[in-house]
Length: 236
Image (cartoon, rainbow, N blue to C red):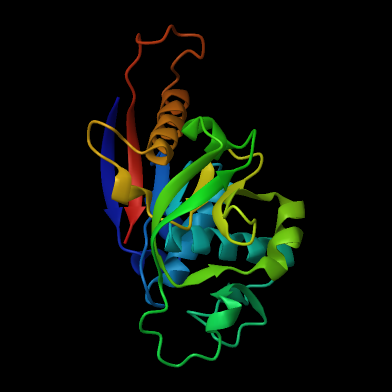
């Protein structure tokens, strides 16, 4: 299975009609990052992936963007946002931890290093990990705001990975979507060319299945008899 990578700048995705750039791709990766620049382009690309059932993998900020986009869809309001991008948003679905709010000097306040993550049985995350609990590496400051967790969960956004005490959302995935998964941690830190991280494996598998479907490959073809070249877009 080959993967052809198409690089897209998030600011290019802010232009009207930019969804055409994603028309012929089989998957979308939104990686980590900091700051507001290009955030609306990432949200626009994420919305396309949700509405068109395009396999999606969000890495750290990519998960946060996925939550923002879904909240806008659920609330019918484009003001849902992260307090990193808009401090005064009326729907702060991504925000600082409560103990960090009001701190002006953010130095040393990031969540860094390895933390355990408990997986929800039956979720896509649990399937690809084949485990109940894993340890993953973090490098971020903003978190999923638990005030919106129940409402978004009822609408289909599953918290499929959490801290052992259940207080921090580590993995989010969209129910009834082929593969729309975002992680608060950085799976790329533990992925290797000859040993891909389970989330990358699951994403590429979903993209390959979409590629096969778009190219008219018979659904019942025996394993090993087909080769898909999945084209994955990655915003930056």
